[in-house]
Image (cartoon, rainbow over all chains, first blue to last red; front, side):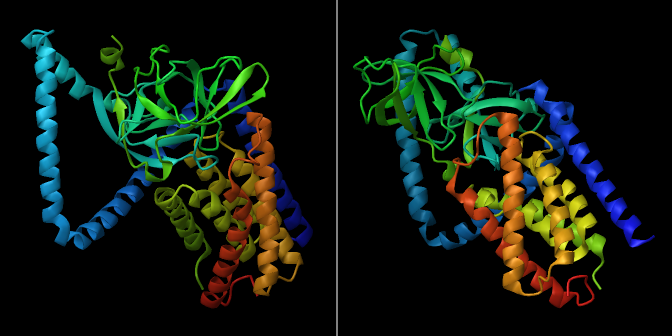
Length: 278
Length: 162
């Protein structure tokens, strides 16, 4: 084949590849937020790779950490025993209080429901275009996950909610720092209601609060209000770090979330929010 | 001589594993070090424009699949960057490490610009101010890819790059 024909063939191939990509992009865009079969298939194919890598990394780091901490194991074990002792006491006291209002059978069923409602999960990857936008966890529809379930970190602070695509063993989580998130919130002191959304850069904004409203102070805590019927009320979200008045008739309230994305390895999925919303 | 297919196949596997690992170590690292860009530019300079374009398609689509955004965005930008890198490397003298790094810096910047441009069209918002690490990606890509090519030249003297 002559160099000219070779060059022509190469440009033809690159042209076809570009057209292929443009068709692929244009096929997805009109569907908006609905996930295509192709996307679900690719998620099923690639997330196990990430799970294997994460698992191997955790195995190596945990093993190394254990070796280094052998000398401190006894001390840690004693501290954990003490913590478990106090948690048991607290649990017993709370159960006693509940017994005053509920019958024994109701109490047993409620406690069983609560323990069945929380599913631990591991974060296996973040969105590379903007890691404050979404993450993938290693639980899916096989574990009973559906769309719009609240996700909390290991301290009980709100992280986000489940969203499509959800495969049998993985699910996407839209973080509260994402611009596509939206939840009903309330301030802890003044009980000021608002809608919280992410700014895509690690912080959140409380929207639609009138500039003339006196409520909302720097340092005040933000909690879920439960009004949206998605997130149970009273879950900690973050603290107000800035209030400004350059958004027309509304205040601009900036919230620093409590969850730390760099330490987000284990999360809890609240599977049965109906129990808490009742 | 190291066989092309094995090198590129292994390259894809290493890129996927490193991408997943970097995300676990620190989320900022996956913005700073785009393993798929490194692979595409390496394939383009080491083997040619066609290999660069095809590797750009494969690596770009894998990157899209792992970022859970619109499928094809990274594929398009990586395909174009891979083709241009291969085609221009044939016409320019990029023997020298520093010259090659500058060349790869501009190609990586071009790839990023194309990606950000199409992202802003599809999502109607700009990524330009999303994270400062974004602006350092071409630098890291250029240095790492150039180093990888130097290493490859030593291991495979009969390779296309001289």
